[in-house]
Amino acid sequence: MDQDTRNWFYWIGRIETASFVALLGVAMPLKYLADQPEAVGWVGWTHGVLLIVYLIALLSVARVYRVGLFRVCLAGVLALLPFGPVVLEWLWRRQGVLGPS
Image (cartoon, rainbow, N blue to C red; front, top):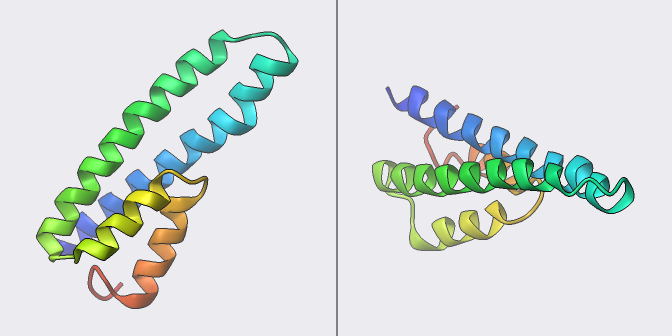
């Protein structure tokens, strides 16, 4: 069960990262270069929902694995950066925060 929870959390982070990259790399250029602002509406809304899901998952995983406040705050800040959840996954796997991989 622990491995499933850990993998579930990391996959949510990857999906959230992909939505952020799509927002910055596809939707924003469409808005400003191709005059198609509706792309930002849909992709931005999707990214926002995924970000909220990721933060809820972060709090859940932090509670189950008893992750410290500093690491949770760091993860929250990284969630706001492009590729932040991927960096967090790499860092936590390296440190064994959520158990051995």
